[in-house]
Amino acid sequence: MLNVGKIEEGYVLDHIKAGKSMSIYHHLGLDQLDCPVAIIKNCRSGKSGKKDILKVECAVGTLDLDVLAFIDHNITVNVIKNGEIIEKKHLSLPASIKNVIRCTNPRCITSAERGLPQIFYLSDADKGIYRCRYCDEKYVENDSQAWSF
Amino acid sequence: MRHLLTPLDFTTGELDDLFDLAGSIEKDRSAFSHVCSGKKLATCFYEPSTRTRLSFESAMLNLGGSVLGFADAQSSSAAKGETVADTIRVISCFADICAIRHPKEGSARVAAEFSSIPVINAGDGGHHHPTQTLTDLLTIRSLKGRLNDFTIGLCGDLKFGRTVHSLIHAMSRYDNIRFVFISPPELKVPDYITQSLNEKGIPYEEVIKLEDCLERLDLLYMTRVQKERFFNEEDYIRLRSFYILDGEKMKMAKDDMFVLHPLPRVSEIAPEVDNDRRAAYFRQVQYGVYVRMALIMTLLELA
Image 1 (spheres, helix red, strand yellow):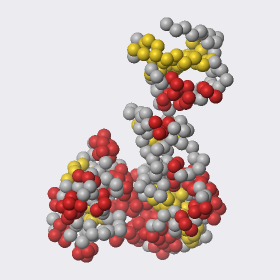
Image 2 (cartoon, rainbow over the protein chains, first blue to last red):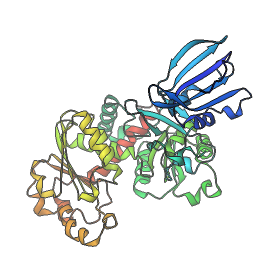
Image 3 (cartoon, each protein chain N blue to C red):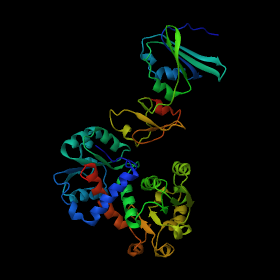
Image 4 (cartoon, rainbow over the protein chains, first blue to last red):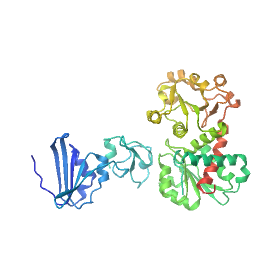
């Protein structure tokens, strides 16, 4: 088993679906942060067989957890201070997300108008359906075009 | 400040107020002929739509206001590459209220976000055309005296017809509504709509021919069946007569069943039906002017 040291302050993102950690790394903007990040892939997991874990050493409050909830709300977020877990957050789907995915409907105004933000709203919380704020087009999960910012 | 961007922006209570006002306008138009004196409506039409634009302009002129605007993108700054956001900020300095039609879906919402005057969506691509829905509802309420307890037949292209989709959503908010969808299999109402009706427990049935349901309808909403929507010409020729309303078919309908159509009509309603007192599609155009007058007054807070 691979060992990664404890962090003093920051986040441990646990129960990430195996293989998803790099995508989360990108969408949380961790590549922009000047702080230590450990990406642990394909760990053994009692729940799901395999999982990914991300450890981020940064000031608490730095990460946009809404984005994380949109990507996978089953992820457990452990908030760390002074080397201890001070909070275990269970994520819920955000009411809206901005500039995370883009609308792929070619008839949408966002395809023509410069400078518009890409906003999606949660239209069905039970089914986790998000729609474009402007044209109401449904976001289809894992649509690679929608993620190509 | 309020805008009208989708057919469901107003609650049914607010719609009642709007339709009451439209009813008062219908009864005594002269009483409203100066209420918008000194006010200006901008009609920003990025694609041609003579009927809707003239209806808006007629509505504002009837209220004593004035009108300015453009009738296609080529004669606007859009041809120079100006964004909707910039255009509406400029228009906000020229007018008190704006009706916008634009081929892109969601364009009216963008306009509303950047506008300092009320924005009315006069059609944003295949997305919404809320004033058509308001027109349909006012027509129904005026002809029948109510908006609940109907069996409504919707006939023709139910797959791509946005007026039909909006009307279904809008009528779904009233009690005891039953829908009959009359279309060829290729042009059936989309699954997401029938699914939403199922979730709300609103009854509906789907039939292939007008004859299969005409006698039990309280209202019939006709739309065009376009040849190019069919997979092949044989099917089109085989099916098209099912969706043409003529004098013979009207004999099967109730005496108080009204026929509506968003227009323009092509061949789906035979001219002989025009003289039937149940043909309401030209009265519908007049109600379109009344409801736009009521809407302009409401959004300008002059009601």
